[in-house]
Amino acid sequence: MNFVYLSPHFPQNFRLFSIRLKELGVNVLGIADVPHHQLPHDLSHEGLTEYYQVGNMEHYDEILRACGYFTHKYGKLDRFESHNEHWLQTDARIRTDFNIPGLNVTELHRFKSKSKMRAVFESAGIPVAPGTRVTDEASARAFIEATGYPVIAKPDQGVGAQHIYKIEDESQLQSFFETKPEVDYLLEDFIEADILTFDGLVDQNGQVVFYTSHKYHPSPLETVNTDANHYYYSLRHIPENVVEFGMKCVQAFQLRESFFHLEFFYFGADQPPVAMEINRRPPGGLTTDMFNFACDIDIYREWAHIVVHNTFLTPHYERKYYTCYAGRKANKPYRHTHDEIMATYSTMIMHHQPINPLFQRGMGLYGYLIRSEELAPVIEAAEFIQELSI
Image 1 (tube, rainbow, N blue to C red):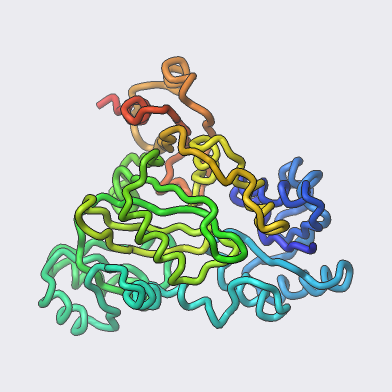
Image 2: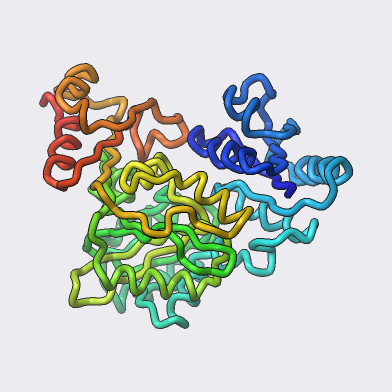
């Protein structure tokens, strides 16, 4: 099998996808814009059959030429993947141009456009927040007259909580239209509720072989827009209605051989969750490592086996632990030093590392992964890590 992996070194933990594939005898062919000697040593020596450096990954023709070179040398390309939302369109174009299985350009709109996502959710009977696509102030005002303030404005095509605004009054609405980026926006009714994710992996037949859920504290939007401290944790016991509606979403979007990341507003067991968005990728940051620590599995190896053999090695996995990510921002006066954190919670902290600058606005400068069989100690540790001195 010839598997082309775009940007195999970023984010750093995703290099394990390439390494696990190579361990199964796959020709893993990497494309990125960094010199070969700057790749992580284990990736360059254990995870790649060959590496092709391009000058600019935003230039599609360079990616196209790299794939042409790999085709000439190794034969037909069997897969092309990046696991990264930023390269979703590039992934789809290459698959289309080289007739590679997976999401192609005719299917891309369902995952790139939030308005198209809403249409799929609604057609499957999955609740969404009241919302509409707006092109000018008049259409925005017409929507707000029906719903009232506050509303959320989000790019129709966007990633994460960047360039999303909470608009609470007339002055903020006017300011939004004066300063917003020149892209199409959605307006949605603001919903106050817990946010739960539904994350997992489907096999080549579209069957969910792994799933889990995480709870944010606070929401990603608040984290980014107010520079708040942020932690989130996996659940050992997932609400039944989140599982039910999450499974319906996976089926509605016809996912195959893919990770998924869904976000829901959650109101409790007696109300259906409201879908926010779906992503055809693993959740970001260190969340894939949280999968592993929560369940004592290797999700990178499991994914590789789905690609090569369409088998999940640990079909009877258990959610043994609550696993939490807690980040610390660069500009906050924390009460406890790193050494104090490690001395206090060394048995619970499974991993810690600096966070790449691209993710620091949401995830913080430095992150810790904590686990325990009980939830209370996990939250206690997260709050200790983020406690401020003033």
